[in-house]
Amino acid sequence: MTKQKPFSKLKKVIDSLFDEKLKMEFCCNSYPIRGQWGHHNSIPRYYVKIGKEIIWDFPKDFDMKELPFYYWAENNYINELVREYIDTPIEKLLNKKFKNDKNGFIMQYLYSNHQDIFEIEYKLTELFKAADRRIGKDNLLKWAKKVNNPKVDRILAIRFNNK
Image (tube, rainbow, N blue to C red; front, side):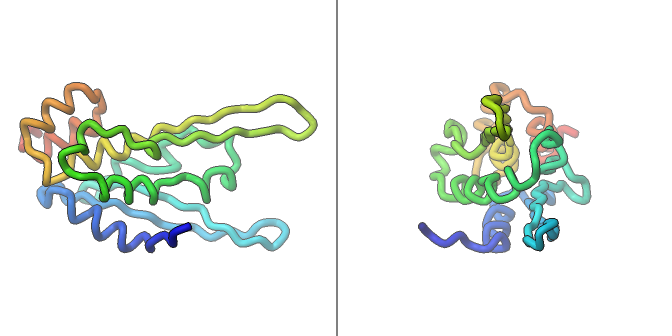
């Protein structure tokens, strides 16, 4: 198993790919909590900002109320998703389906055969693609027509002065 790089290193690289005009940042905060039996955990919060406005927020923007935090706090794979995006060759970015852009959890209940399956679609790489300074305007606009994501449309409008 390879050791994961600190988030600050990922942040520095991913933020450097964004068009400067956007003033877009990818951020992560970790909120420490203490369990009832003395266990120490932390709840991560990932978010994307344009200027001071948050346009994407995990877990806030996702229906996570039914799912205990310990199901997703350690296993959300967002750092791995960012690393995968950074490592993808530019010519493959627009057509690539990122495996970690979706995540699923199975909740098994004690003394029951019942299971609930929760699936989360982050759509984070769509925002990264729209903001990526390495991708040209024509290719992005063609790609955006297929995506149908209002946040992508907003990023492109700011980026290409179509506010």
